[in-house]
Image 1 (cartoon, rainbow over the protein chains, first blue to last red):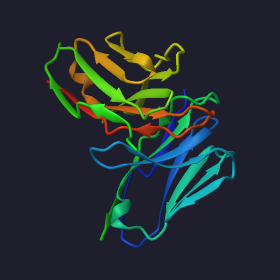
Image 2 (cartoon, chains in turn orange, brown; image 1 turned 45 degrees about the vertical axis):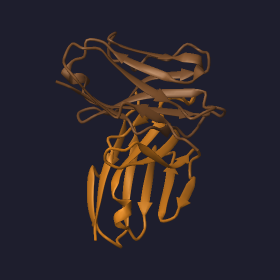
Image 3 (tube, rainbow over the protein chains, first blue to last red; image 1 turned 60 degrees about the vertical axis):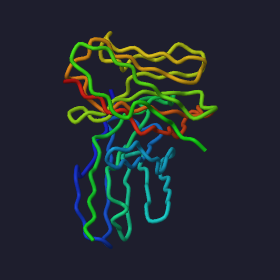
Image 4 (cartoon, each protein chain N blue to C red; image 1 turned 90 degrees about the vertical axis):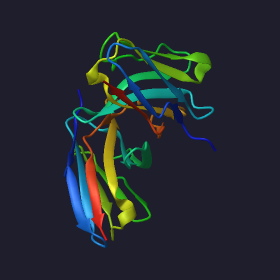
Length: 112
Length: 115
C-alpha cells in the first residue's frame, strides 16, 4: 500500500519567515493534494498537482510536484499567524482516482 | 452555497452501544467518502460511494462498521457495539467525480468518544 511521509512533523516559525513542508510517497504519485486543517474543523483544500514539475501558487503558498522523486513540497512565504494549522498531503493509491491516502500531517505554529 | 454537513458534531457513547453518524454531501456531488482521523492512525479511508455503483468498503476496519447512501445523497455510517478504539473524528467528503482527479470537499467531522 502507498505511504506518504511528511516532514517535519511539527514546525514553529517566527511571523514573516519562510518555510517548507515536504511530502514523500513510497510509490508512484497519482494526483497530489494539499489540505489545511484547523483544530475542530474539517480539511480545507489548498491545491492539487497532477503532473511532474507542476507548480501552483495561491496567495503566499506554493506547491510543487517532483514526480521522479515521488515528492511534493509546500512552501509558505512570509508566514502569518493565519497560516497556523495542520497541513496534510494526500494522494490516490492508484490512477483510478477515488479515495485518498494521507500523510501524518505537519503541525505549523507561527509566533507573532 | 452549502458545504458538506455532518451530524452530530459530537457524540459520546458507552462501550457496546450502536451509533449512527450522518453526512449531507454537496448537492450534485456523486462521490461520497468516509474517513476516520485518530491520534494513533492519522487520517484513514473507510468507504467510498460513487453514483449507483457498489461501494468500495475496503477501508472498513471490521464488520461492526457499515454505511449506506440513500437516494445518492445523504449517507449514514453505523458503528455497532462500539469499542473504545472507535473513538476518533469521522470525516465525510464529497466530490463531483467527473474527472479522474477531483478535489474532495470535507465536512467538519463528528467527534466520537466511546467511554
